[in-house]
Image 1: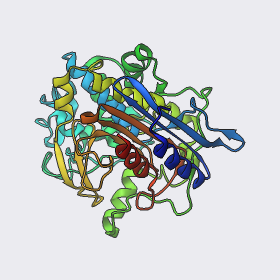
Image 2 (image 1 turned 180 degrees about the vertical axis):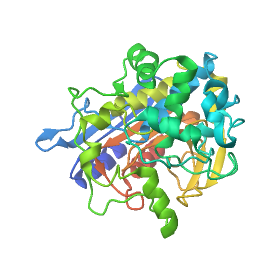
Image 3 (image 1 turned 90 degrees about the vertical axis):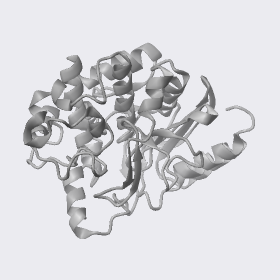
Image 4 (image 1 turned 90 degrees about the horizontal axis):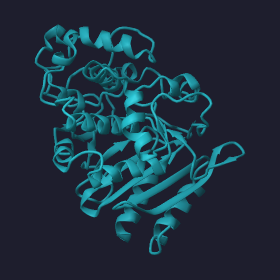
Length: 357
């Protein structure tokens, strides 16, 4: 760790001391690592190291948004083009004119799959969503598409490129840049064991019982126990909304590569990280602000004190992103899921980092 970041180290020590799991915090600045911290347990009797991988949950969405930006830069995906131009079946139920941008910005109105299908079946869920009517006129409301973001983009990108997203994560990001990231992880790859902190729950902004039932349909029980989230089947399913696996170093470096212009030209990144949707989530009551697949700095400080930020958080506390005005990228990974309304780990680390800078 670079000298001068002792306050970050002290804050991280407090985070680990208050956890029964483990964590890592990695920071890059203009291509150079400046913070690399890890501690606690990846599993019982297994210490967390700098190479510990963890399921990233919705941190996966930021990886997929990066792939979408790369494809846009290469002329293979156009956010303004109708989804149906790539995926004709999607035109059903009044969706013929829905642009790609509305899927990326969570405004398409398909937050859950109406048909009861296996959660890990990308193709079946995508086909069902293509037939499905939106809950609202696409583009008129914003609501987090917790799992359907993945089904929709997996099929859209497959139709547009002929490749599956797991392969594109590998060939566009992981292999050329030596990033320990996977979407579709073999069972032989070691991954930290996930655990739920006592009282863990989702959608902590939501009080309405009717919309709580909508949330239950959205998440399909994924976060209700550790059995599914720790399974080799879940990690191997290549769910583009939440089953990627990686290290904190890899995630921080990914956002560093975005800032540097090495992955996409500055104009493409600027377009992907400007505001495409914002407001209070129509389902969850949480303030939201999205670019093209990236979360942006919001009123509740998800990305710390920086006024300009982009990235993506993950269920249970993961936080990955960048502060462009500081030339800084970061990733906080953990295997202990804490509820958003009580979890201060990433926020305290980002506050200490911002103060140090």
